[in-house]
Image 1 (tube, rainbow, N blue to C red):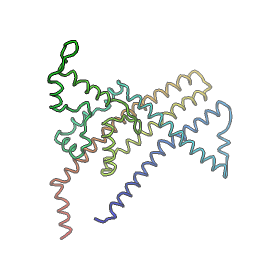
Image 2: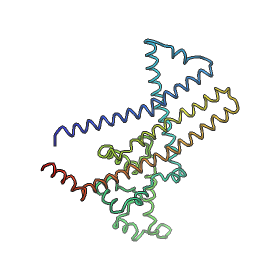
Image 3: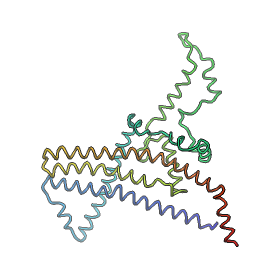
Length: 309
């Protein structure tokens, strides 16, 4: 193999990653930040009856360049802050019990429904990190289980312990520890499911871009960034109509309904993103395995033999 091939491949991967990062920042930070900055300026103008927008738009030369740079910088900062606050809100919602039940957060039941047990076992053997279990779900070794449940010492009152009572306490403690919130990037819960998702996402991005979930990540960031402009638009609507009762009712109600739809999509996509990363990694494994077996494995050899002749 040409020694320059890995270097060129790495450069191509870095270039693709950088283009995705730039697209992500433009779509989910800068563009919503410009909208928030414009809405805020319009709101201030309406409240103070000033014409700041026309004054700024008439700036030319060096002053116009400075105004444009300051506007872009301010929009980037505002967009980033608004997106972070939206992700923090979504993270708080994901910790609620009824939300976890509704969206089945942390569930991996679809893997057992969609894939054969032998395929899962073979894939988890290759990708050992995916086979890691929650501590609360790990079986207790036989010797430790026998030592715990064999002859329990009597209490001070003379009542012997139940066989499984002492062994249940570590399991409950481990379960509570696994459900604890450990903040990570994007305000995800830092549990085993999250690290399975990160492993699968990075593997697909590096070795199977066809199965990558970058588009879902971009959509999630854009949806999170839209929340702040929607809320600020309702304030502009009320001020524009002079706080008429119809605007006072329609503005907040419309904004809340729109934000509810956005939050529902955000919660659904964040769960779907984690599931699809692992599922796509399994699909990639099955596709590679099928390509390495007949009749697909014999096709390249036949083509090579024909070219040699």
